[in-house]
Image (cartoon, rainbow, N blue to C red; front, side):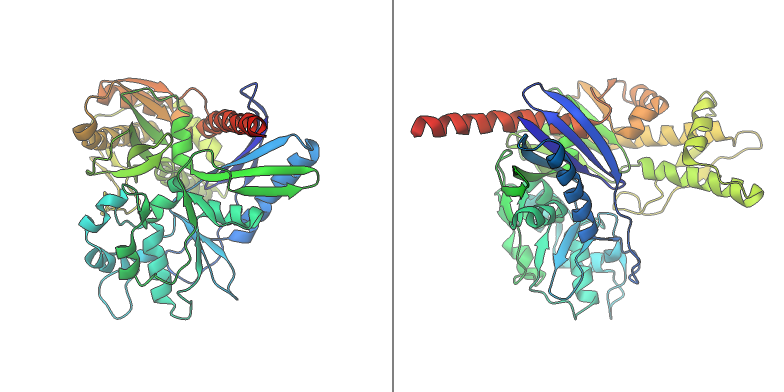
Length: 456
Protein backbone atom coordinates (compact mmCIF):
# COMPACT_ATOMS: atom_id res chain seq x y z
CA UNK A 1 0.00 0.00 0.00
CA UNK A 2 1.19 3.52 -0.88
CA UNK A 3 0.62 6.49 1.41
CA UNK A 4 1.17 10.22 1.14
CA UNK A 5 2.49 11.92 4.26
CA UNK A 6 2.41 15.71 4.49
CA UNK A 7 4.16 17.59 7.30
CA UNK A 8 2.95 21.18 7.68
CA UNK A 9 5.69 23.06 9.49
CA UNK A 10 6.27 26.74 10.13
CA UNK A 11 8.56 27.25 7.13
CA UNK A 12 7.92 24.32 4.79
CA UNK A 13 5.28 21.85 3.70
CA UNK A 14 7.21 18.60 3.36
CA UNK A 15 5.78 15.60 1.54
CA UNK A 16 6.86 11.97 1.61
CA UNK A 17 5.46 9.28 -0.69
CA UNK A 18 5.73 5.96 1.13
CA UNK A 19 5.47 2.27 0.40
CA UNK A 20 4.05 0.81 3.61
CA UNK A 21 4.65 -2.80 2.53
CA UNK A 22 8.34 -2.17 1.83
CA UNK A 23 8.58 0.23 4.80
CA UNK A 24 10.38 2.72 2.59
CA UNK A 25 10.13 6.29 1.34
CA UNK A 26 9.71 6.29 -2.44
CA UNK A 27 9.83 10.03 -3.04
CA UNK A 28 9.87 13.32 -1.19
CA UNK A 29 9.49 17.02 -1.90
CA UNK A 30 9.43 20.32 -0.04
CA UNK A 31 7.36 23.44 -0.69
CA UNK A 32 7.42 26.74 1.13
CA UNK A 33 4.64 27.42 3.60
CA UNK A 34 2.69 30.53 2.54
CA UNK A 35 3.94 33.61 4.33
CA UNK A 36 2.06 35.58 6.95
CA UNK A 37 -0.27 38.34 5.82
CA UNK A 38 -0.31 41.96 6.90
CA UNK A 39 -2.48 42.51 9.96
CA UNK A 40 -3.20 45.70 11.89
CA UNK A 41 -3.42 43.81 15.18
CA UNK A 42 -0.19 43.97 17.17
CA UNK A 43 1.37 40.55 17.72
CA UNK A 44 -0.84 38.87 15.13
CA UNK A 45 0.55 36.09 12.94
CA UNK A 46 -2.00 35.06 10.32
CA UNK A 47 -1.74 33.09 7.08
CA UNK A 48 -4.43 32.84 4.41
CA UNK A 49 -5.90 29.38 5.13
CA UNK A 50 -7.03 28.92 1.52
CA UNK A 51 -3.44 29.30 0.33
CA UNK A 52 -2.32 26.48 2.63
CA UNK A 53 -5.15 24.24 1.41
CA UNK A 54 -4.25 25.04 -2.19
CA UNK A 55 -0.63 24.04 -1.62
CA UNK A 56 -1.66 20.76 0.00
CA UNK A 57 -4.23 19.99 -2.68
CA UNK A 58 -1.75 20.68 -5.48
CA UNK A 59 0.69 18.20 -3.93
CA UNK A 60 -1.99 15.52 -3.61
CA UNK A 61 -3.17 16.07 -7.19
CA UNK A 62 0.35 15.78 -8.59
CA UNK A 63 1.04 12.49 -6.84
CA UNK A 64 -2.42 11.15 -7.67
CA UNK A 65 -1.79 11.89 -11.35
CA UNK A 66 1.58 10.14 -11.22
CA UNK A 67 0.35 7.14 -9.26
CA UNK A 68 -3.30 6.62 -10.27
CA UNK A 69 -5.20 4.11 -8.12
CA UNK A 70 -2.08 3.43 -6.01
CA UNK A 71 -2.46 5.89 -3.15
CA UNK A 72 -4.27 4.26 -0.24
CA UNK A 73 -4.23 7.08 2.27
CA UNK A 74 -3.19 10.58 3.31
CA UNK A 75 -1.43 11.23 6.64
CA UNK A 76 -1.03 14.74 8.04
CA UNK A 77 1.56 15.93 10.57
CA UNK A 78 0.55 19.43 11.58
CA UNK A 79 1.94 22.31 13.66
CA UNK A 80 -0.13 22.75 16.81
CA UNK A 81 -1.64 25.52 18.99
CA UNK A 82 -2.97 27.48 15.99
CA UNK A 83 -6.52 27.55 14.63
CA UNK A 84 -8.88 28.73 11.92
CA UNK A 85 -12.06 30.49 13.06
CA UNK A 86 -14.53 30.60 10.20
CA UNK A 87 -17.55 32.90 9.96
CA UNK A 88 -19.55 33.97 6.88
CA UNK A 89 -18.29 36.90 4.82
CA UNK A 90 -14.85 36.90 6.44
CA UNK A 91 -11.69 35.44 4.92
CA UNK A 92 -10.55 32.29 6.70
CA UNK A 93 -7.17 32.91 8.29
CA UNK A 94 -4.90 30.46 10.04
CA UNK A 95 -3.87 32.03 13.34
CA UNK A 96 -0.45 30.49 13.96
CA UNK A 97 1.18 29.35 17.20
CA UNK A 98 3.46 32.34 16.62
CA UNK A 99 0.50 34.70 17.16
CA UNK A 100 0.82 36.64 20.42
CA UNK A 101 -2.21 38.96 20.35
CA UNK A 102 -3.36 37.77 23.78
CA UNK A 103 -0.42 39.76 25.21
CA UNK A 104 -2.11 42.98 24.05
CA UNK A 105 -3.88 45.15 26.60
CA UNK A 106 -7.54 44.33 27.07
CA UNK A 107 -9.92 47.11 26.10
CA UNK A 108 -10.82 49.27 29.08
CA UNK A 109 -8.45 47.32 31.31
CA UNK A 110 -4.85 47.60 32.48
CA UNK A 111 -4.45 43.86 32.14
CA UNK A 112 -3.56 41.96 29.00
CA UNK A 113 -6.03 39.44 27.62
CA UNK A 114 -3.82 36.67 28.96
CA UNK A 115 -3.69 38.19 32.44
CA UNK A 116 -7.46 38.53 32.44
CA UNK A 117 -7.89 34.90 31.39
CA UNK A 118 -5.48 33.75 34.10
CA UNK A 119 -7.87 35.27 36.65
CA UNK A 120 -11.00 34.01 34.89
CA UNK A 121 -9.63 30.47 34.49
CA UNK A 122 -7.36 29.54 37.42
CA UNK A 123 -4.65 26.97 36.91
CA UNK A 124 -6.64 24.32 38.78
CA UNK A 125 -9.33 24.49 36.07
CA UNK A 126 -6.73 23.52 33.45
CA UNK A 127 -5.14 20.58 35.28
CA UNK A 128 -7.20 17.88 33.54
CA UNK A 129 -6.51 19.52 30.17
CA UNK A 130 -2.81 18.81 30.49
CA UNK A 131 -1.99 22.32 29.25
CA UNK A 132 -1.94 25.74 30.88
CA UNK A 133 -2.64 29.22 29.63
CA UNK A 134 0.21 30.69 27.58
CA UNK A 135 0.69 33.22 24.76
CA UNK A 136 0.82 30.67 21.92
CA UNK A 137 -2.37 28.88 22.99
CA UNK A 138 -5.18 29.06 20.45
CA UNK A 139 -7.83 29.45 23.14
CA UNK A 140 -6.18 32.63 24.44
CA UNK A 141 -5.69 34.19 21.02
CA UNK A 142 -9.21 33.31 19.88
CA UNK A 143 -10.58 35.04 22.98
CA UNK A 144 -8.43 38.11 22.29
CA UNK A 145 -9.58 38.16 18.66
CA UNK A 146 -13.29 38.06 19.51
CA UNK A 147 -13.03 40.53 22.38
CA UNK A 148 -10.95 42.96 20.34
CA UNK A 149 -13.39 42.89 17.41
CA UNK A 150 -17.03 42.52 18.59
CA UNK A 151 -18.20 42.51 14.95
CA UNK A 152 -16.91 38.93 14.60
CA UNK A 153 -19.80 36.58 15.50
CA UNK A 154 -19.33 34.09 18.33
CA UNK A 155 -21.20 31.34 16.52
CA UNK A 156 -18.50 30.49 13.99
CA UNK A 157 -16.77 27.17 13.32
CA UNK A 158 -13.43 26.36 14.89
CA UNK A 159 -10.83 24.24 13.13
CA UNK A 160 -7.33 23.10 13.86
CA UNK A 161 -5.10 23.69 10.86
CA UNK A 162 -5.29 19.97 10.13
CA UNK A 163 -9.06 19.71 10.48
CA UNK A 164 -9.47 22.70 8.15
CA UNK A 165 -7.52 20.81 5.51
CA UNK A 166 -9.49 17.63 6.20
CA UNK A 167 -12.73 19.59 5.90
CA UNK A 168 -11.58 21.09 2.59
CA UNK A 169 -10.81 17.59 1.28
CA UNK A 170 -13.73 15.60 2.72
CA UNK A 171 -16.36 18.00 4.02
CA UNK A 172 -15.81 16.76 7.58
CA UNK A 173 -14.35 18.89 10.39
CA UNK A 174 -12.47 16.12 12.16
CA UNK A 175 -9.31 16.40 14.24
CA UNK A 176 -7.11 14.08 16.25
CA UNK A 177 -6.91 14.73 19.99
CA UNK A 178 -3.17 15.32 19.55
CA UNK A 179 -3.88 18.40 17.42
CA UNK A 180 -6.90 19.66 19.33
CA UNK A 181 -5.55 19.41 22.89
CA UNK A 182 -2.97 22.25 22.54
CA UNK A 183 -5.79 24.72 21.79
CA UNK A 184 -6.72 24.41 25.48
CA UNK A 185 -10.36 23.27 25.32
CA UNK A 186 -9.88 19.52 25.77
CA UNK A 187 -10.06 17.59 29.04
CA UNK A 188 -7.30 15.16 28.06
CA UNK A 189 -7.67 13.01 31.17
CA UNK A 190 -11.39 12.33 30.65
CA UNK A 191 -11.41 12.64 26.84
CA UNK A 192 -14.06 15.33 26.48
CA UNK A 193 -14.52 19.05 25.84
CA UNK A 194 -14.06 21.07 29.03
CA UNK A 195 -17.54 22.62 29.16
CA UNK A 196 -16.83 24.79 32.20
CA UNK A 197 -14.08 26.62 30.34
CA UNK A 198 -16.24 26.95 27.22
CA UNK A 199 -18.98 28.64 29.22
CA UNK A 200 -16.61 30.95 31.11
CA UNK A 201 -15.22 32.24 27.82
CA UNK A 202 -18.69 32.61 26.23
CA UNK A 203 -17.76 30.12 23.51
CA UNK A 204 -20.92 28.03 23.90
CA UNK A 205 -22.22 28.79 20.39
CA UNK A 206 -18.98 27.95 18.57
CA UNK A 207 -19.01 24.74 16.51
CA UNK A 208 -16.03 22.61 17.49
CA UNK A 209 -14.47 19.85 15.39
CA UNK A 210 -15.23 16.19 15.97
CA UNK A 211 -12.39 14.74 18.01
CA UNK A 212 -10.99 11.27 17.34
CA UNK A 213 -8.61 9.38 19.61
CA UNK A 214 -7.90 6.30 17.50
CA UNK A 215 -4.61 6.66 15.67
CA UNK A 216 -5.65 4.97 12.43
CA UNK A 217 -9.26 6.09 12.09
CA UNK A 218 -10.36 7.09 8.59
CA UNK A 219 -11.94 10.56 8.67
CA UNK A 220 -13.19 10.68 5.09
CA UNK A 221 -12.39 10.08 1.42
CA UNK A 222 -10.79 12.47 -1.04
CA UNK A 223 -11.60 11.67 -4.65
CA UNK A 224 -9.45 12.82 -7.54
CA UNK A 225 -9.33 11.16 -10.96
CA UNK A 226 -9.27 7.41 -10.39
CA UNK A 227 -7.99 7.78 -6.83
CA UNK A 228 -10.12 7.38 -3.72
CA UNK A 229 -7.73 8.39 -0.96
CA UNK A 230 -8.50 7.63 2.66
CA UNK A 231 -7.83 10.70 4.82
CA UNK A 232 -6.55 9.96 8.31
CA UNK A 233 -6.67 12.45 11.23
CA UNK A 234 -4.21 15.30 11.69
CA UNK A 235 -1.48 14.17 14.07
CA UNK A 236 0.53 16.62 16.18
CA UNK A 237 3.86 17.39 14.54
CA UNK A 238 5.75 16.96 17.78
CA UNK A 239 4.16 13.57 18.46
CA UNK A 240 5.02 12.44 14.93
CA UNK A 241 8.62 13.60 15.38
CA UNK A 242 8.93 11.77 18.71
CA UNK A 243 7.47 8.64 17.11
CA UNK A 244 10.11 8.88 14.39
CA UNK A 245 12.95 9.48 16.86
CA UNK A 246 13.25 5.84 17.99
CA UNK A 247 12.61 6.67 21.63
CA UNK A 248 13.14 3.79 24.06
CA UNK A 249 11.63 3.29 27.51
CA UNK A 250 13.30 5.70 29.91
CA UNK A 251 14.58 8.06 27.19
CA UNK A 252 14.03 11.78 27.20
CA UNK A 253 13.66 13.70 23.94
CA UNK A 254 15.16 17.13 23.38
CA UNK A 255 13.67 18.38 20.14
CA UNK A 256 15.31 21.50 18.79
CA UNK A 257 13.94 22.94 15.56
CA UNK A 258 12.34 26.34 14.92
CA UNK A 259 10.71 25.77 18.31
CA UNK A 260 11.97 23.41 21.01
CA UNK A 261 10.67 21.08 23.70
CA UNK A 262 11.83 18.52 26.22
CA UNK A 263 9.55 15.50 26.42
CA UNK A 264 9.01 12.05 27.92
CA UNK A 265 6.51 9.31 26.98
CA UNK A 266 4.34 7.86 29.76
CA UNK A 267 1.25 5.70 30.09
CA UNK A 268 0.15 7.56 33.24
CA UNK A 269 -1.62 10.91 33.57
CA UNK A 270 0.18 12.59 36.45
CA UNK A 271 -0.14 16.40 36.41
CA UNK A 272 2.89 18.49 37.27
CA UNK A 273 4.95 21.44 36.11
CA UNK A 274 4.68 20.40 32.48
CA UNK A 275 2.11 19.79 29.77
CA UNK A 276 0.56 16.39 29.19
CA UNK A 277 -0.34 15.85 25.54
CA UNK A 278 -2.13 12.88 23.97
CA UNK A 279 0.29 10.47 22.31
CA UNK A 280 0.05 7.39 20.14
CA UNK A 281 -1.08 4.11 21.66
CA UNK A 282 -3.31 5.80 24.28
CA UNK A 283 -0.21 7.16 26.00
CA UNK A 284 0.80 10.65 27.01
CA UNK A 285 3.68 12.91 26.10
CA UNK A 286 4.93 14.90 29.07
CA UNK A 287 6.21 18.11 27.53
CA UNK A 288 7.84 21.38 28.46
CA UNK A 289 7.76 23.71 25.47
CA UNK A 290 8.95 27.28 24.92
CA UNK A 291 12.54 26.13 25.27
CA UNK A 292 15.28 28.07 23.41
CA UNK A 293 15.39 26.92 19.82
CA UNK A 294 16.43 27.68 16.27
CA UNK A 295 14.51 30.93 16.19
CA UNK A 296 16.48 32.12 19.25
CA UNK A 297 19.79 31.47 17.51
CA UNK A 298 18.36 33.20 14.43
CA UNK A 299 18.26 36.45 16.42
CA UNK A 300 22.06 36.35 16.68
CA UNK A 301 22.47 35.30 13.04
CA UNK A 302 20.17 38.05 11.76
CA UNK A 303 22.08 40.63 13.79
CA UNK A 304 25.33 39.56 12.13
CA UNK A 305 23.74 39.75 8.69
CA UNK A 306 22.52 43.25 9.48
CA UNK A 307 25.96 44.40 10.64
CA UNK A 308 27.57 43.19 7.42
CA UNK A 309 24.92 44.85 5.25
CA UNK A 310 24.94 48.16 7.12
CA UNK A 311 28.73 48.35 6.95
CA UNK A 312 29.28 47.06 3.41
CA UNK A 313 25.85 46.90 1.70
CA UNK A 314 26.62 43.25 1.00
CA UNK A 315 23.83 40.81 1.70
CA UNK A 316 25.17 37.56 3.12
CA UNK A 317 22.99 34.50 3.53
CA UNK A 318 22.05 32.68 6.71
CA UNK A 319 23.97 29.66 5.40
CA UNK A 320 27.15 31.76 5.05
CA UNK A 321 26.88 32.94 8.64
CA UNK A 322 26.42 29.39 9.90
CA UNK A 323 29.36 28.14 7.86
CA UNK A 324 31.57 30.66 9.61
CA UNK A 325 30.05 29.90 13.04
CA UNK A 326 30.74 26.16 12.65
CA UNK A 327 34.32 26.86 11.54
CA UNK A 328 34.90 28.71 14.83
CA UNK A 329 33.35 26.04 17.05
CA UNK A 330 36.54 25.63 19.08
CA UNK A 331 36.45 29.17 20.46
CA UNK A 332 35.22 29.25 24.06
CA UNK A 333 35.40 31.61 27.01
CA UNK A 334 34.24 30.62 30.46
CA UNK A 335 33.39 34.19 31.44
CA UNK A 336 31.14 35.16 28.55
CA UNK A 337 27.46 34.35 29.20
CA UNK A 338 24.59 34.49 26.73
CA UNK A 339 20.95 34.19 27.71
CA UNK A 340 19.27 33.28 24.41
CA UNK A 341 15.69 33.52 25.71
CA UNK A 342 14.79 36.44 23.49
CA UNK A 343 11.15 35.39 23.09
CA UNK A 344 8.82 36.24 25.93
CA UNK A 345 6.89 33.28 27.34
CA UNK A 346 5.77 32.01 30.77
CA UNK A 347 9.25 30.67 31.58
CA UNK A 348 11.25 33.63 30.30
CA UNK A 349 9.69 37.06 30.69
CA UNK A 350 12.67 39.45 30.82
CA UNK A 351 14.29 38.82 27.44
CA UNK A 352 17.81 37.61 26.69
CA UNK A 353 21.20 39.15 27.32
CA UNK A 354 24.96 38.97 26.77
CA UNK A 355 26.96 39.38 29.96
CA UNK A 356 30.51 39.48 31.29
CA UNK A 357 32.07 40.91 28.18
CA UNK A 358 35.77 41.70 28.53
CA UNK A 359 38.10 43.39 26.08
CA UNK A 360 39.20 40.15 24.44
CA UNK A 361 36.37 37.60 24.76
CA UNK A 362 33.57 38.79 22.49
CA UNK A 363 34.00 36.88 19.23
CA UNK A 364 31.68 34.98 16.91
CA UNK A 365 32.88 31.59 18.15
CA UNK A 366 32.75 32.46 21.85
CA UNK A 367 29.33 34.08 21.42
CA UNK A 368 27.76 30.96 19.92
CA UNK A 369 29.60 28.62 22.28
CA UNK A 370 28.08 30.53 25.20
CA UNK A 371 24.68 30.42 23.49
CA UNK A 372 24.87 26.61 23.16
CA UNK A 373 25.92 26.37 26.81
CA UNK A 374 22.87 28.38 27.86
CA UNK A 375 20.54 26.27 25.72
CA UNK A 376 21.90 23.00 27.11
CA UNK A 377 21.69 24.26 30.69
CA UNK A 378 18.11 25.38 30.11
CA UNK A 379 17.10 22.01 28.65
CA UNK A 380 18.57 20.11 31.57
CA UNK A 381 17.08 22.47 34.15
CA UNK A 382 13.58 21.85 32.84
CA UNK A 383 14.22 18.17 32.19
CA UNK A 384 14.70 17.87 35.95
CA UNK A 385 11.07 18.94 36.40
CA UNK A 386 10.00 15.93 34.34
CA UNK A 387 12.23 13.56 36.28
CA UNK A 388 10.37 14.40 39.49
CA UNK A 389 7.43 12.42 38.09
CA UNK A 390 8.98 9.98 35.62
CA UNK A 391 12.06 8.93 37.54
CA UNK A 392 15.56 8.36 36.23
CA UNK A 393 16.39 9.20 32.63
CA UNK A 394 18.42 6.51 30.87
CA UNK A 395 19.48 8.49 27.83
CA UNK A 396 18.66 11.51 25.71
CA UNK A 397 17.51 11.52 22.10
CA UNK A 398 18.42 14.79 20.38
CA UNK A 399 16.02 15.40 17.52
CA UNK A 400 15.19 18.33 15.26
CA UNK A 401 17.10 20.09 12.53
CA UNK A 402 19.12 22.30 14.88
CA UNK A 403 20.54 19.32 16.78
CA UNK A 404 21.38 17.53 13.54
CA UNK A 405 23.13 20.59 12.10
CA UNK A 406 24.85 21.64 15.32
CA UNK A 407 26.94 18.87 16.90
CA UNK A 408 28.43 21.49 19.24
CA UNK A 409 25.01 21.84 20.92
CA UNK A 410 24.60 18.07 21.31
CA UNK A 411 28.03 17.82 22.92
CA UNK A 412 27.07 20.56 25.38
CA UNK A 413 23.86 18.70 26.27
CA UNK A 414 25.76 15.48 26.90
CA UNK A 415 28.40 17.20 29.04
CA UNK A 416 25.92 19.10 31.19
CA UNK A 417 23.43 16.23 31.64
CA UNK A 418 26.00 13.49 32.13
CA UNK A 419 23.73 11.27 30.04
CA UNK A 420 24.48 9.44 26.83
CA UNK A 421 23.07 11.49 23.95
CA UNK A 422 22.24 10.18 20.50
CA UNK A 423 20.67 11.72 17.46
CA UNK A 424 17.33 10.46 16.22
CA UNK A 425 17.61 7.61 13.71
CA UNK A 426 16.66 9.80 10.74
CA UNK A 427 17.47 13.45 10.17
CA UNK A 428 13.86 14.11 9.23
CA UNK A 429 12.00 12.66 12.22
CA UNK A 430 8.67 13.77 10.79
CA UNK A 431 9.26 11.61 7.70
CA UNK A 432 10.31 8.68 9.90
CA UNK A 433 7.22 9.12 12.08
CA UNK A 434 4.90 9.34 9.08
CA UNK A 435 6.43 6.13 7.71
CA UNK A 436 5.78 4.40 11.05
CA UNK A 437 2.16 5.59 10.88
CA UNK A 438 1.79 4.47 7.26
CA UNK A 439 2.93 0.97 8.21
CA UNK A 440 0.53 0.86 11.17
CA UNK A 441 -2.42 2.24 9.18
CA UNK A 442 -1.71 -0.25 6.40
CA UNK A 443 -1.86 -3.12 8.90
CA UNK A 444 -5.19 -1.86 10.26
CA UNK A 445 -6.64 -1.46 6.77
CA UNK A 446 -5.61 -4.99 5.80
CA UNK A 447 -7.23 -6.38 8.95
CA UNK A 448 -10.46 -4.59 8.09
CA UNK A 449 -10.35 -5.85 4.51
CA UNK A 450 -9.76 -9.43 5.66
CA UNK A 451 -12.47 -9.13 8.31
CA UNK A 452 -14.92 -7.68 5.81
CA UNK A 453 -14.23 -10.48 3.31
CA UNK A 454 -14.70 -13.09 6.03
CA UNK A 455 -17.99 -11.57 7.14
CA UNK A 456 -19.30 -11.50 3.56
